[in-house]
Length: 410
Image 1 (cartoon, rainbow, N blue to C red):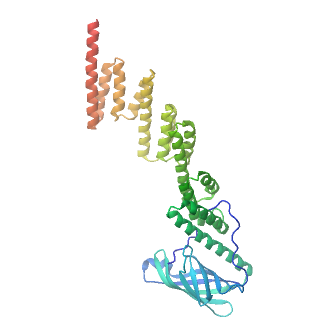
Image 2 (image 1 turned 60 degrees about the vertical axis):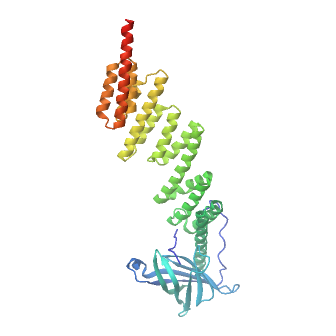
Image 3 (image 1 turned 90 degrees about the vertical axis):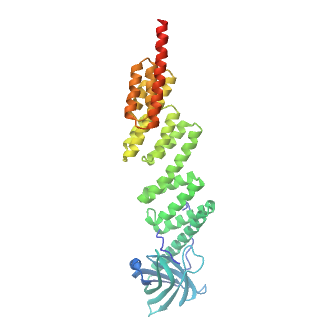
């Protein structure tokens, strides 16, 4: 079965393997007409397709070999002792995929037939008729042979790398991904869309192995020439790697180092809510509440979704609440922060209760009662309402005791 060709890494590779001996290279170009099984979904693959064929007849080796290139098929590698029956194999396939028969028509023409079940994007055909003309240019023939041989090896190596990667053999897959990318670079050049599969494969393999140094070098080398699809993939992997490193430093309470790494992750994708949450957590655990609020405010301004902005707003309220509790414990002004928390998230009973207790403790009994009553008017959640009523009742009892003690003292 042949699958549609991938016109699709090592950063440093040895020189490409030499192409087959150049003696007797014949280059043909022309068309292949696919005869498909009846299906309206396959009509796009009907008709004639540009096709290139390179045949090598080397007196030092028995038989023929070469390559077949078509714009909808993977490169086929030809081998056999007779041009009337050549086996065709494809990247990633150990055995022969199809057969091709060739016959000369005059001095400069070839006709032929590609036989066997061929699958292109779920559309099948069993016969492809070839009509080809000789290109009488030895330099072009040699260059075409080198390109096809290199591209075939690149694709074949990539398939083997993906197979190992799929089975969890990442260490074995990595050098194959590196090699395949180096080969593909030689064919397509940096910035080509044809490289995406090669780069993505290697990048994901590096990520699986935790090879941050290698991945970062790959990222820096490729990101400026990548299309948007590849940029998103590489950025996602880098953000995940940075986030993981930052969380490890955070767990060790190395807050400054963690923040430096996590801010890099955030800046690569400022709409990533996980990055925002993690940076905020570092700020709070290190007691840097004002910086946390400043960061959240500028982060929220960059978000497009109303739900995300509300979430940031609620987190800011939480930061003010946590700051208020810390300030109260340290005998500092806590009321300002608690009022901000209540103003930002008036539906949160916990913030309201903390502010009411503080005002009550300061002797402002009527204001504390009023705050709780306002909460009962605004908050509809039944469990929160019961909690507020319990707090109000407890504060009333405390107020009665205080007033009795004050009366007894007078």
